[in-house]
Image 1 (spheres, rainbow, N blue to C red):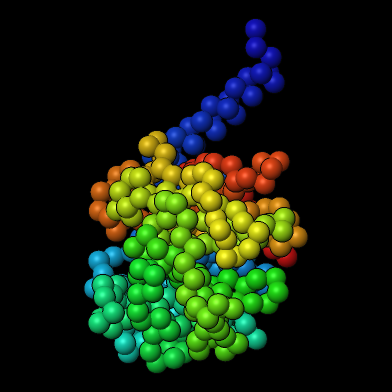
Image 2: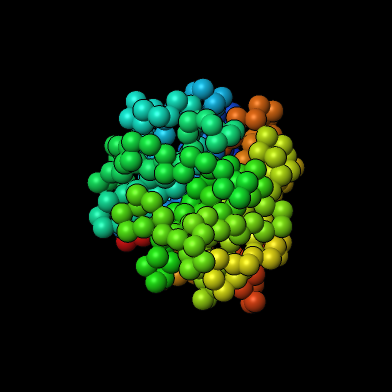
Length: 335
């Protein structure tokens, strides 16, 4: 015979089950409030760059749409990785007169109290076309950003690299680099002090090719344990095989030998997982992969969403395969 305590427990469990069922049927969220869930914000967004400024996480993505609709950038900020605030139209073609479409894959870096926003525009196919990689600047990471040069910073093909998918990287010695390139070629160049141009390397070249095996686009670099980790996207961006691989070197100039593929589709979760960035929480060994992927319900190439999952390392410093999830990541305030 059930005791009174047993009866009460059974009733409580039944009530809890019924409430959960009603919530699910009503469309209410049932995920724990301590997890971000994936995607981390609504809307079609791709090529996300995640970064920390002071006590705030930021994500700067491409607005994922047909090229002629990609005429602006939004960004998103969060104090804890769970709740994201949208900052609309931080830059658009009204403020970049030489850009008219295909504004892609932003990268941002702070220098001397200003925020420099690098972006690709116009998807140029030859040296005769107008467009390439530009810079905008603002006093605040949420913008509004204004065109910095009034023209592209890079508007030609060097070493076969299409001038897109730029990533601004600050080395420990204070040197700033721009790493970029599509069409299966990747260059690195040393930015001058005011970001108006480049400083030649010792041998006189300005754009040095560092293309590793398998590289397609989407470069990203970070440092850990005295080593330089170089990551890039492979495969076709509209297909399920889009993915991320990496190499390690002792210098930002490489050479980078491909080690492994670490981010890719899970046919049970999503396809086309790629074009990522990495957020490292200072003074911790907490790393997050910020990337886009395509929901299983979608076939349109532009139907891409931004997600975050943890990135971890083995005892040799190699990146472990990143497990893409629907749950996302746990709450992590920076204060």
